[in-house]
Amino acid sequence: MILNGTTIADTYAEAFRVRCARIVITACDERWAETAARVFTGYGTSFIGCDAEAGIERSLGAHETPDGRPGKAALLFGFTTGSLQKALVNRTGQCLLTSPTAAAFDGLAGAGERVPLGKEIRFFGDGFQKSKVIGGRRFWRIPVMDGEFVVEDTAGVAKAIAGGNVIIQGTSPASALEAARRAAEAVAGHGGVIAPVPGGVVRSGSKVGSRYRALKASTNDAFCPTLRGRVARTDLVAAATCAYEVVIDGVDEAAVAGAMRAAILAAAGPDIPCISAGNYGGKLGKFLFRLHEVLR
Amino acid sequence: MSGWKLTWKRIHAGGPPAWIDGSVLCPDLLAELPHDRLMDTRLRVGQRELRLDDVFEAAPLAEDGGPMRMAIEGSHRFVRLGAGTRAGVLEVDGDGGDLLGAGLEGGEVRVKGSVGVLAGAGMKGGMLRIEGDAGDRLGGPLHGEAAGMGGGEILVAGNAGAEAGARMRRGLIAIAGSAGELPGHHLIAGTVLVVQGDLAFPGIEMRRGTVIGLGSLRPPGVGFRRDGPVEPTWLRILGRRLEDLGFGPAARSAWLSWLSPPLESWSGDRLSLGHGEVLVRGAAL
Image (cartoon, chains in turn purple, red):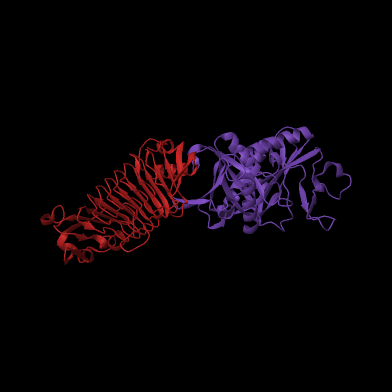
C-alpha cells in the first residue's frame, strides 16, 4: 500500500491488555491545571522502568469538570489493577496534593472496578480531614496551606490496551522527526488515547529480551540505522536513515486503531519512504493492529 | 413504565376530615398493581381502615418510558405520605402533610405545595423536592431515634421551619428560602444550606457536618471559633450538583457564583465533638 508516496508496510502492531484509570485534574486556572497534570503524568513513558504509563488525554472546559474549574483529563495505565492503584495513589499524593489549588476526581464513573484513592491519601490530614458525599460520590477534604485538597474517595479502573504503535522511517533525522511530530499531534487530538513517550515520540524503540539476562528489553536493532551492516536482518528500507516510534495506549481497540490511523495519515508524505510497526511475532500481545486494516 | 393518578372522590374533595396514613401510598408498592388490587388496598383514615376505593378515584398515567410513578392529590392531613419508598416517583399535587417521605430509601417524592413537620425524617436515600415551605425538624429523627436522616437529598424551594437538619447524620438539605432558628441542631454529619435570611444559632451541639448560610450569622454559639475567610473547592461541587438537579435559579452557573468565595468559616461546636463548620457569606451580627 502506498499513501502520499509512503509505503505502508504490510505488518502489524502488537498490543497488550492492561488496566487504565482516568483522573480529572482541576485547578484555579489553566496554567496550574496544566502544571499539575504534567507533573502527575511525568516519568510515565514505559512499563519497562516506570510505575505506569501516563499522559494527558485532553483539556477540559469549566463546564466539564465536577467543580466548574479548568481541568485536564489524565490517563494512567498499569499491567494490573494492583500496580495501577499503587501508581495512582503515589502520583496523586506526590504530585496533585502538592500542586497549588489542584483537585483530583475520578474520570471513569461507570467502571466496574474501583480502587481506593482519596481513601488512602486522607491520612495526610492527620485527623483534621473531612469527607462530603455529594450526588452519591464521596470526596475527601484534606486541609493544606492554601485551603483544602479535594480528592475523590475512589477511582474507577477499566480494561484497556497498551502498545499500539507506528514506526516512521525518514530519509533524514529531520524529516523523520518532523513526520513523527505531526503523527504525535494527530494522536493528541484523539480522545481515549495517550502517547506516553516524550512528546509522543520515542527514539529508543525496544525489543523483548537481551543478551544481558537482567534486562527485560533492549534496543530494537532491526530499526537502528547504525547497525544495518551488523545485524542479520534489518527492517529499515533502503532509503531510510532514521526511525521514530509513536506509542499509543488507549481505552479500547477502536480508540487505539483510530489514533494509529490518524498518526499514519499525518506522517505519510515526502521524505518518508516507509511506515511500519513493532510486534513480537504475535506471540505476546492479545491485540494485533494491522496497518492496512486500520487505514481502511 | 406507567402508574396511577389518585384524585379525591367528590365527597372528599380536598381530602377527608381526618388524618390519613399515607405510608401505603408509595410508587413501588402501588404503581404496578392492577386496578382492582389497587382499589382494594387498605388505608387508615382517622380511626378507621378504609379501602382506597372509598377515598380515591384512580386513573392510569400515560406510559412515558420513565420509572414507575404515582400522582396523588395532596392534603395537609396526610401523615407519612410516601414513607419508606424504595423506588419510583411520587408526585403530590398539593400539600404533603407531616412526616412526608419519612424513612425514604430511594426514588423521589415531589410536592407542589407545602409540608408539615419532620419531612424526610430518618430518610436513608432518594430525594424529596418541596416546592412550597417545610415545617420544623426537616430531615430530623423519627420519634425515638437518636439520628436524623442518614442519606439522600431534600430540596425546599420555599422556607423551612426550626431545627432543619436536626441530628442529621449524612445527606444534603438545601433551602432556597430562609430557615427558622437552630438549623443543624445536633448535626452529626451532612450539609444544610440556607440561601436567604440570617442563620440563627446554627449548628448548636453539632459534632461534624456543615451548615451554610448565604446571609449573616446571628450570633454564633459560645462553642464556635472563627477560622476566617475560606474558599472551599467542595462548595463548587455542591453548586454543580444543585445546578444538575435543576434546583434554584435557572441561570447557568448561578450556584457557582452564589457559593463562590469568600465565606466566613466558624468551627465548632466545642461543647460537642467540635469538628463541624458553619460557613456564612456575611458577618456575624
